[in-house]
Amino acid sequence: MSKLFYDMPKIQNAFSKDDRIVVYCGDCISAIKEIPKESIQLIITSPPYNISKSYECNSILDRYLKSAKNVLRNIIKVLVE
Image 1 (cartoon, helix red, strand yellow):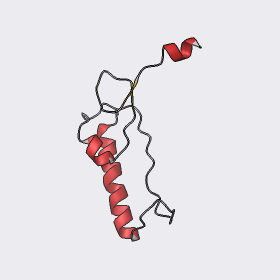
Image 2 (cartoon, helix red, strand yellow):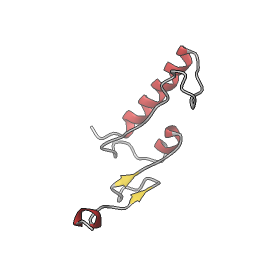
Image 3 (spheres, helix red, strand yellow):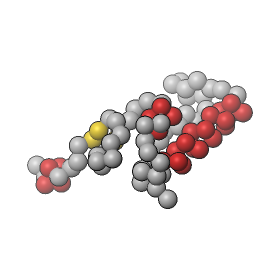
């Protein structure tokens, strides 16, 4: 096996300032409440796109935009400037 895989940090499922990689599956607002401000360098998210996919629950545009704005507002707080 390649040395790359031996040096790979363990992927965690909850935030800790000592871990390099955390993959959290769930509601991002709940997860962000556990993360100190300005402590994250990168966030990758897969928001609902509100485009009638079979796995989505569509909502009216105003409600969707309000929800997306809330998520973005909270994500920004934990990102390093």
